[in-house]
Image (cartoon, helix red, strand yellow):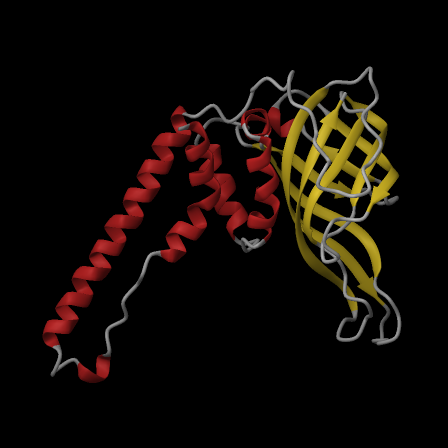
Length: 262
């Protein structure tokens, strides 16, 4: 039941947009008053259905333990990648698992140069706490990046608002960004435990699909509580091959799992 509740949270935008919405044909209003009445009733039913979905989800969120699940027996499985990354240091333990959703950011020369290649200028992502999913069903977790990568970024605020109903800081672990000096950083202090890290890339492996950004191992160079970070099971984010059609900074949407060790 708990896993179904998790899925309901992440699939809610799809459920709402999948509800059929009838549009009356104004050109035939006189001849089709009966049809219009049916359309009105259908739209009213749609609203009731949507309201029911929201009410049910809010109720589930208030009674669902989204965070604070034990990760003592959870181990990152990288068998889906032909080139595995180095394993975590033996003196470290898994602290958090996050689902990141945001953009990989690139820049191209100005004026436009169609023969040059885009340059990476970092990333920006919201980190959703999925530690409970990781501890309960890791295979389910590995399907989420591809699913969430297809969700419009505009729904992130909506998702964050819905998840916040479970309590202050619940559901949103933090954010991922790059510092001015180009260091990938993770601020997990949304969860209230004070963890954060600035990191450097120490290993990379191609994702199974060429359209997905590589899997990475990052080591902490500054911070509290976090010593190693893995970016795995990526979806999207790869830049176009050339700058044709691009000038200046642009973004490519992506999602990925982030595993934090400390």
